[in-house]
Amino acid sequence: MQLSANTVERQRRELALQIALGTPLIATKGYGAPEVGATSARARELCDRVGDTAQLLPILYRQWAYHVAHPETRMARRLAEEFLRAAESQNAEGPALVARRAVGFCQYQCGELIASRNNLQQACALYIAERHRTLAFQYGQDTQPPALAVLSIVLWLLGYPDQAMRMRDEAITRGRETAHAHTLAHAQAFAGCVLSAISRDWHSTREHGASLVIFTEQQRLALWHAWVKFYHSRALSELAPTEAVLAQMREALAEVDATGTTRNLTFHLVLLAEVHGRLGQAATGLSVIDEALAQVEAADERWWEAEIYRVRGELLLSLTAENSLEAEACFERAIEIARRQSAKSLELRAATSLARLWQTKRRSDEAFALLPPIYGWFTEGFDTADLKDAKALLDQLGPCETDSS
Image (cartoon, rainbow, N blue to C red; front, side):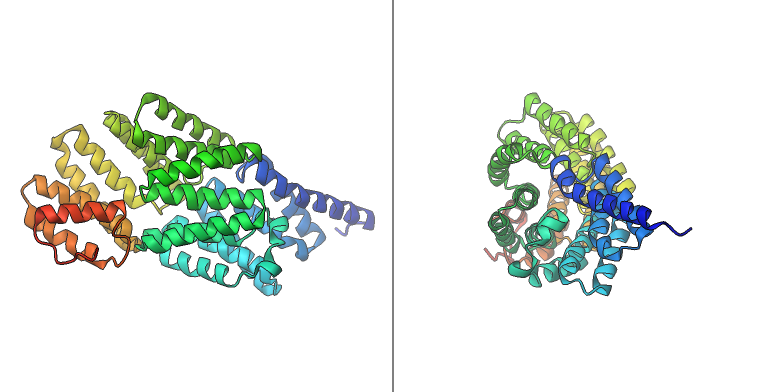
């Protein structure tokens, strides 16, 4: 049925309104808020009705952001790829960079780390501030700092901790240069808090978390405020694991959930389970790990999957030594997953756990055979926690010919 000119004009005006609503809603309520989903879906419907392909790109981005927040990774990935095809077909240089970052982010979430690195590096390399900084007003944030932030995590997972830290610093510097609150919060939450937490740099996690808690509250950025409260509390738990800190972490997770966002939930649950373990609550920690494993399958959020199994193994051992065979299977599963993803840092961490277990079972020769190849692969990061732990264990097991420190 052909629409009247008045009807088309009304729909065009409503489309402009729905698009304008998207950016402030994402910034203040979070990507996964129901309002974001509703306005994005309505904008897509109106865009299809009036045939306005010029407006399609920011709508696709917001639909992607909404689905990646839950996370519905498979749907988000389809939308990111549609977004990239549409941007390239329109020769839209700036949106194509945003789309490539979106594709790279989905690949990271799925544990496809090398493909993710390639897309994120391309998005960062082609970014020119003078031409692309206005993207922040179309898409709710500048594209380069968040891309650099996620790239820092991917580099760490792939086994390049020093490069990851340099990328972290660049992401935060570029975020500050934008003078755009949502961009800086996103970049610092990932590069400052997530990266520091995965690398067990709890001092840095605490510092970034403390500053961001104040900043995100002042800017009324609900999602990022809840996120960084969680990371700050987790960092505090390393100084003093207490029931009070555990309660703070659970309260922060409830606030994240209230924004409609469950992205990174697998990672958050593992951090929570570790604190339960440190408090002598291994059984509760294992229940939390079961939640994380269920989330992996439901959301296809696999970037931290290897560590879920490793932590499960450690919790089983802390519960009773009789669980050693099951724990050994968990460590071996973690190594298998890490190798499949090329996640060298997680492979090293899991191999260290398995070698330590074998040492207690008088299987030191097997332990020593396991660790040197993965430790010897590394060419940087020898002052980081994981490489120090692996080196200390190797020194206990026997002479090490892979000392590159």
